[in-house]
Amino acid sequence: MLHLSVVNVGQGPHDHVCRNLKKFGLPIMSNPTPKPKQTTAIDHGVGSRIAFLRAANGLSQSALASALGVSFQQVQKYETGKNRVGAGRLQAIAERLGVPVSSFFEPEPEAATENGPALLRVAGAVELLRAYNQITDDQMRRDVIALVKSAARIGHGTSTAETVAQRSATNGAAAPSA
Image (cartoon, rainbow, N blue to C red; front, side, top):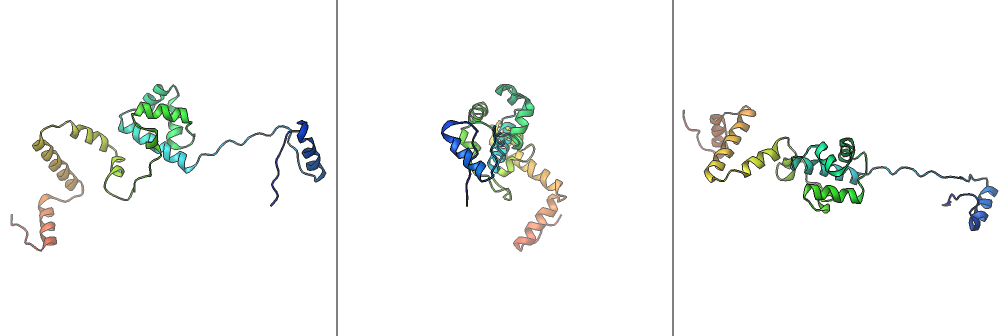
């Protein structure tokens, strides 16, 4: 495979290269224009982590943009992976969000699991955890968990009696009579 370099015309020691390129009928560019760097999957991953950590910190795109001295549209482009984030800007984002720069490069958690970081991406999950974290009474925490579980059952159309009956049938025990 033949690899050719494009050089500018009239650069002294490279003039012989230009003559050789001409001799073989190959084009010589007088002013080559660099192609813009394309974003990669890593850029998209970094952007999604910026969005996640920004939301987890309760910051709007505008608030983060203001802290960085850029427009909120620029933050949107970072978060969607349309624009690459430079090293200095990534450091500033990490400082503002209170995380190490390495957190933007950690492996993506399995989205299919129902545990861990993937659940934090659900709208309102971080807000719910923040509120729960402010509760100091252990019994109150247990009551909140019971309330949320009941709301989840209602949301899925399953009543408490139906849930007890399903558990009893699964365990081979008879359901309690009402």
